Amino acid sequence: MGGISPAGRTSGHQAYRRTVLEALPEQQRHHTLLGLASLMGLAQRDDQGNWADSEGKPCSAADIITQHSDYISRHTLIRRTEEPAFGDAGIPANRATTLNLAEPIEFTLRKRDFPETPPAEWEVSEVDSRHVKVRVPAGDFSVLLPDHRKPLVNSAAQLPTGFEPTAFYRSVHHPRALAMTVFGASDCIGQSGLEWQHILDRLSPDQVAVYASNSTGQLDQQGWGGLLKSYVTGSRVTSKQMPLGYGQMPADFLNAYVLGNVGATAGQLGACATFLYNLRLAVEEIRSGRRRVVMVGTADAPVTPEVIEGFRAMSALADDNSLKALDALELLTDSDYQRACRPFAENCGFTIGESAQFVLLMDDHLALELGAEVLGSVPDVYVNADGWKRSISAPGIGNYITLAKSVSLATSILGEEAVRQRSFVHAHGTSTPKNRTTESHVLHQVAGAFGIEQWPVAAIKAYIGHSQGTAAGDQITSALSTFQHHLLPGIANLNKVADDVYAERLTLQRNASECHADVSFINAKGFGGNNATAPLLSPEVTEKLLLNRHGERAISEWKRKREAVREASHAFEERSQSGHFDPRYVFGENVLDGAELEITSTSVTLPGYANSISLKVDNPFGTLG
View: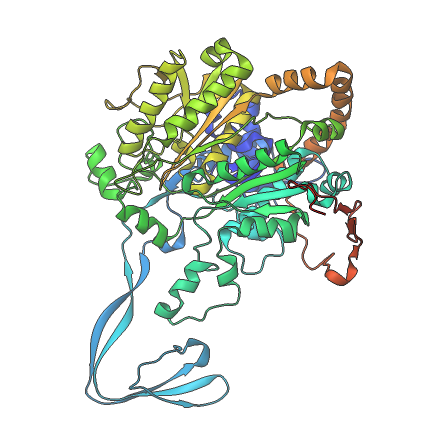
């Protein structure tokens, strides 16, 4: 697994550790703070293990922790929005006004600043190849003047301050979500300890797949955000803004610039359940035998004034006025913004977040052959719609079905006692009044049906906000880390469970708690009725299943191969911990067109790929003649 979120990078369990920081042993806590310091550009470690600060001055690890731990705490997770557009000057906007010109005026503009559709009354003449002269006659004119507006929402979960994903590879006007895709997928491959080319060399090219997308598209200036604002602001549309804005573009970037994939690809969109939709595709493809390894992921970067205002207009966000009313405050401080998201407590709306999360799935035969580190397994993903609805954004009945099916499958695999005593839920947990009631009722009903009396519930959005389509990816990577560390993150800011929460069968805690689980249920309740739940099996359970299927000899051989993979993964972690990042980004190399292919009636051979693609396809209809 790999990625980047407001809690840090996913590899090395860093992001997870940030959410349970106070519950960690001192050594792990210090390790996490040093990793975040290097990620945020506050310090860096050289190949000899010596640390230096941002100015290159030598310092000790202890100095870094002492000097920067408070800063790291305040500039990770949910906090006052640091996006420049939300600064003291306010959000850039335009104000309509009427000008009365008693006399004509003349001025010169650069052509690139000249609007494509100027008012008909303007008289325009060319000065030179770069400039035009404009004459505006006397009279009344309606114009848009630059203005600024105070933002109504000032909290968000942004990537750690100082970290910029475009700084580590040759990015050219890449939207933020796509730069996060490159970094996150590279982080995933690095932590795996496997060489991507080594994996490809074992397979036919069409046995690989990439299923990745996001739910919001790219709505910043480099994507559709800049495209849609161009006429209003008088700016020019670039050739990149239209294509790079599509929601499936994370998959396209992975295929073209990170993995060189020529196998299957898709980018499913399903609001907050988007990650699980893509995961479902991967599980079905691997179970069918069509694919043997699949990269799954999502990357969302919706911290823009327009997106935030859109959710605020829906009354979905915790805006400043609502936070003041909730806590009876006159003014909001930085600490108040850090407490904006409160799943299952008295709350007033969710907090927008940005995140990119990726996982590498493969069939069990390939995992054993490669000596892959097994962090867990996914037996299935269930998706159900809500049916008839009054409001398209209101929750409905589909989530009862997805969660019940997931618990039923886990019970069939593990037995009733394991699910009742050794399972936990990673709730969608948005921090809206509607979600705290409806999702808790889903959990309560399903718990009752399966005899679960005290079901531990995590809600990771309390720390890293709601990253829209990537939300379930945040939950999955956190759950995988819980399996490793045996700590379940508490629900930050949960001073008291809200009175309308169905909490009788649920364990809702503010602090991290010890957790030895066999299965976690990853739950998503999305706008429009996009519900999904996935049972996620622990590595211990997965190893038992592998042993049952393949026998002790195969498992012993796998563990032998795994040692070298673990060494490579550890080396990657050390480089990342030191602040040395080298995302996998291949541009303009190994490009093929049809002329290089070798095609016969039975196969297609591609230069640069070790194995051919077989044309012996399954025929479901039989032969007519």
